[in-house]
Image (cartoon, rainbow, N blue to C red; front, side, top):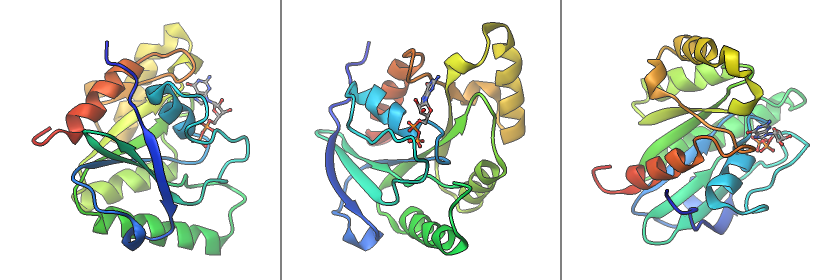
Length: 196
Ligand code: GDP
């Protein structure tokens, strides 16, 4: 078993230029409400490290965490909150694109997809954009516990097909039940390791 990741909050920023340099970083991105904060709390085994909010879209900043001895983890603001204005969306896009394209030593972008509802249009746009921009990225499907046991194999195949990836490439996790959390911790450490 991999121990909880000892994540420590560093700072929040609105611009990639305001971030301290890092030797290795992974970024986590997904639409609002996908379960990103719950997942960060689960891998760290901390209740309130990342804000779990019932108001989707509330976290609007680049939130940087450090994992001493390994590198840093970026919690990117969630996208696709229905009530967001066009100006807000454009601001989000500039901030995220600036970060993803300009951040030095970004080793992996973890794109979260809601396992219960499958990839949204915006998730697919994000995946296409990451591919087109040559960004190393990996899909993690959240809320595994919300899919009925009997439907899991089918759902696993469907979600992967919609994302255009082999099912074996997608890690399924549940922040509530702990499913896949240990595997995700292992992958984070692997991605942050040189040549990982
Ligand atoms: P964020 O907006 O992406 O940071 O998402 P949150 O972590 O705030 O989670 C959004 C909602 O989904 C909250 O009501 C969480 O309790 C719920 N949620 C998150 N992860 C899971 C999970 O693994 N299983 C279940 N059943 N619910 C989850």
